[in-house]
Image (cartoon, rainbow, N blue to C red; front, side):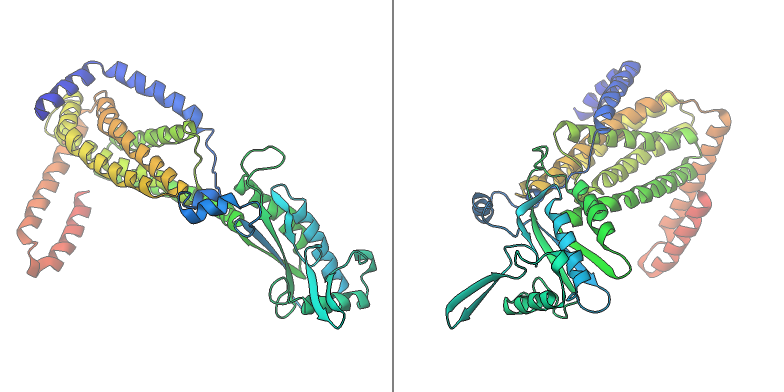
Length: 431
């Protein structure tokens, strides 16, 4: 029954191969438009198990519960302490810069200069409460006496070790991030916010005498997003090495291009689809498309291997492509479906970011069934192989068959090491 179905599917596809490829090309063009709009997106809430009772309680009271999506900026003096007018002036300016940064919940900004930093003491007259830096102190009135008063109130208020370093070499500014950008009402762009931290905070207040250190979820996502450029470079290197390896095996530019191009097409479909679904590419999931690409190349090389064998045995391109399709569609599809199910089970994890990752990976693997098991052999049917190429493939295949037969005779447990070394050496010669 399976053989009959595959035969009918093979006949239908290759009888209409121009129409099939035109439809796939149109789909690729449409999804490429949406793929070009894909942005990296990160959200604090996506990291939380939203169905959990604790998170539901947090969401209910998050307007009055601060401390979750926090950004911490530390002004660190390289030599000496911050208890001088220039350091406290710089801390004031840094506090103001963070206070007016879009995306910051201004109610939560906390530093020595904010009115929510107060010292509470018990005296003979009762409770005494005052700002660490009162309203009568400005950067223009910071003299030695004012600085000493600030230092004493910071110590009395217990802010050494929290807002001020134990050795007084630095002080920090803490703030919560808003869920939405107040200017646009859209979800806060963590990557853009991280970049503004660099340009409007670190670059402005760090120099030879001071360091600015920044931590927090937004900064973490920004750093990971910036690292994605490096990932893309490694992907380009891996692409080149893969192309060289496939060419070394097939000795054909056309057969080398087929698995690579078809795998890239599925990645374009993947990117376009997640854009249509309203997702972005999470920085923590940036490797998923490259993993899916590698899976596609693996299945594509299997197709190319079968086509090469058939060509080496005298079959023309159409016959070789049809035999490759009919022999590999069922095992290839089952393998990809297994991988798809494995990724899809991650949807059961009640964390939005993991679910997005599962959907992204599952779509990519599902598209491989079309691009690498259908598109590739149909495209291969249009290839033309001259007599010289057929002769080279026949010689290579005969050599590889002889090597594999010889290795089968020696690779027993007592000769495992010899067999392994021989395998590596002879396969290198065969390629």
